[in-house]
Amino acid sequence: MSWSLFLLLIGLTAIILFFQWEVFRHLRAYHQRLEREQTQASQELKLYQVLNIQRPLPPMRGWAISPDIGWIYVSEIFKRQPKIILECGSGVSTLLAAYSLQRLGG
Image 1 (tube, helix red, strand yellow):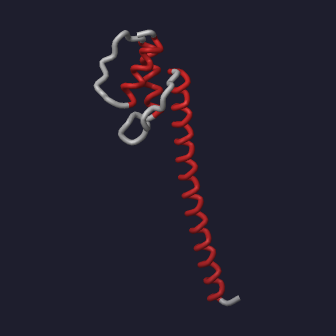
Image 2 (tube, helix red, strand yellow; image 1 turned 180 degrees about the vertical axis):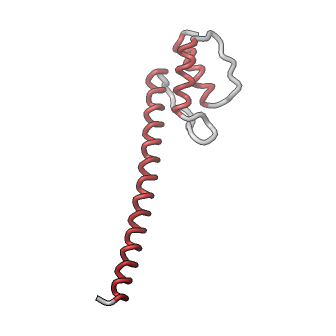
Image 3 (cartoon, one colour; image 1 turned 90 degrees about the vertical axis):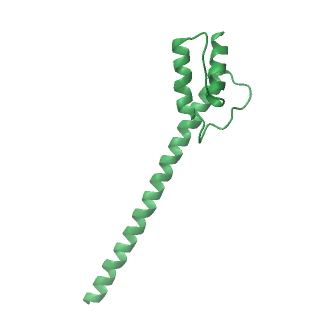
């Protein structure tokens, strides 16, 4: 086998390995995004079930509170059981506080 053919095979192998690594990296990132979305969807479903929410909440992404943080917020309200909450927001966290108080009988 000549050296030029050998170097060509080494080069092609390196290119194939590079593309395989890139595909693996993109698939791993996609898998991580799917896991995060599944976690968020699970937490949002839990909020709907525990608070007995009858109407859809506004989107819980972007500037709004995310479902996992919303669950922590609701859990703290249930743990502390306040009679009054001063809420300075005007979005999902306000609705979660209101539903939580309603569930606690406040």
